[in-house]
Amino acid sequence: MANLVYKRVSTDQQSTARQNLVLHEAGIENPVVFEEPPGTSSRLHPLQRPKFGELLTYARPGDTVHISEMFRLVRGTGHILDVLDVLHQGRLALRIHDGAFSAMDLTARHPRTGELLSTVKFMVQTLAAAGELQRDLQRELTYDGLRAAEAKGNKGGRRPAVQADQTGAVRAAYLEGHSISALARDHRVSRGAIRTAVADLLPDHATIEADAPTPELPVLLDMPGKVADFLRSGDLEPAERAALDLGVVVRRGQGYTLRVSAVPAVHRQLLARCQPLDGGQGLPAVPAQRKARREYENRVSALAP
Image 1 (cartoon, helix red, strand yellow):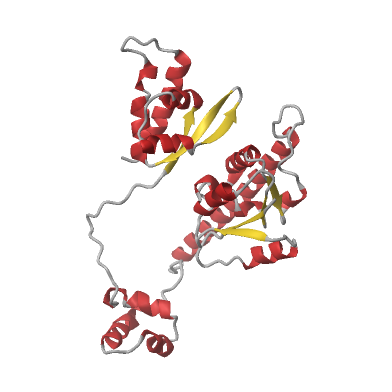
Image 2 (tube, helix red, strand yellow; image 1 turned 180 degrees about the horizontal axis):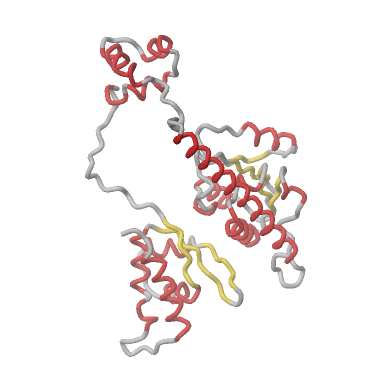
């Protein structure tokens, strides 16, 4: 049974030093570490994050996932319950080593129904809601502070390392042959600040065409189980079949939802394939299936064209 450690910071200005300390003090034996790229936002659903996806692929039943505190992994009650469902399906344990959740067994299930214990679900939802409230209050106070500063003529945000009146001199000196390190010492700034000031003058600078198409990124949508069942029974393109096969099942009462991650084009193709659920072409329309298809259609239609 492996110990899988997950770490994440929200901005590239932060470090994992505090997480490292908490996890080191926990005395985890032979940890396998999965660390997200710096600046991976907590707004991104955990199931869409690359390193957490690698962790779930690597994990085997009986393994334990370790995190320093719950909000390194999830944001809000929906994220928490989704992750707990996935961990339960994979028979993985979750161990949190600091914060309000550290004293709880979040994987506790009813011995007969297998459902998450109602007391655990209540505590998870309550503590997560409290955490969201704290972050929202901090955001509101920050916004009010910035507004007050602007009213006094101060501009918020980090000042540029190379002042605007020095940029011309820095660029001219670079063209004359001064090294980036020397310019950084002369102006008492970082080498990264000098590179920013002379970015378009660097040898490896590449001009990006303004009209170059932006590649589509995967989008996570909930597909009703009745739609997923219908699609699985038909002929699909490889990309469509892969999207369904990699979907995460989330139980909803007597049915389920399939959480599908795919580019918008694939979602639209899948939506077109389940058109028969609306009836017509000699096929009867089943109200529950038609309702499920329209739910999925509303979610796909909300995607940016």
